[in-house]
Amino acid sequence: MSAVRIDLNNLDKSNWKTYRFDEIAKNISERVDPNNTDLEVYIGLEHIDSESLHIKRHGTPDDVNGQKLKFYKSDIIFGRRRAYQRKAGIATTDGFCSAHALVLRANQDVIDPQLFPFFLHSDLFMNRAVDISVGSLSPTINWGTLKHQEFRIPSKDQQAELAKLLWTIDTVLSSRFELLKGIKSVYLSHIEKKLLSKNSNKVLFSELGAVIRGVGYKPENLIDTYSNEACIILRANNIKNSSINFDDIKILPLLQVKRQQLLKEGDFAICMSNGSKDLVGKSARISKPKMNVAVGSFCAGFRPNSSQDEKILEHLFASESYRLAIKRILTGSTINNLKPSDIEGLFLRIDMNDIDDVICKLNVLKNNIRECESSICITQDLHKSIIKKVF
Image (cartoon, rainbow, N blue to C red; front, top):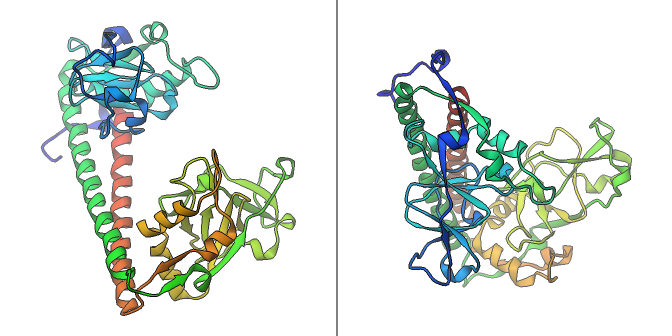
């Protein structure tokens, strides 16, 4: 990054020009019949990660029917349906994609193709895309509207430098994601090989702690503002990546929550019901709550019996063996459900030999994961701030 020299705080925008979007990019509208094509790569919107330039998954022609859009290597596949998901990925090969996408190609006379993907991921473009979307249940962008939108673009003599800077940070991000992937793999492998053993005795979760039932409530009982006389209610969307986020919370008067339903530090929140099998059973540890916190009726709390049980549970909840055990006992057809008794009756074969040493090593790996995730967040924030300054 030191090789790139550009003053982002004093960008000279005096000679920047405004262009219509159809002057900035070409809309590639070649059609493909999945049942009659030599192309082997299909990319649906489900294969594109939000806020990522890189497409890491794909399907095949056998996955779909109906007319699709052809793309070529280096084209951008932009999700025109539900644009708020911010999906715009770079094609790494020729193929075809969902008709709910636009295939975009930079007009090199106006914008450097290396800078174009970052323009599409800017707040300037994405917010405009959301604003011009039509439809309520599944808002969608029409090319006829998008092509007339106007955007101010950096001068050609600045674009190469800006692209180089942004791609340098993107490379750093990619390497850190790979590092995180590697640490997680080692961590999960260590749980299976050191903490769990097929030759060990069964340990019921009821021997490690107790379930705390969620709070049932009616929408009319919710309040808007938190105070010491209120309680935050966590739901499935608040349990993510083994941690609690407080986005989109619900709040109840404290009087409507039983004292034994309040969670404290070291407890776990567990998702007990969801349309996705991958989400049911997901858990997160409660860390030093400064507010009154409980879980809703589609979740449950779990209180460890001891500090050692808490440390063991933190790693068990993250294990592949736990995920497989949960999937075996799910009930329901469209909605997957767990009962409190399912958690209490769940068991894993835990090797209690040298347990303190094993937990210590797992804690180190867990901390390494957290540090790597924190580093990624910092780098992502830097990346976004630079894109915002440019566009």
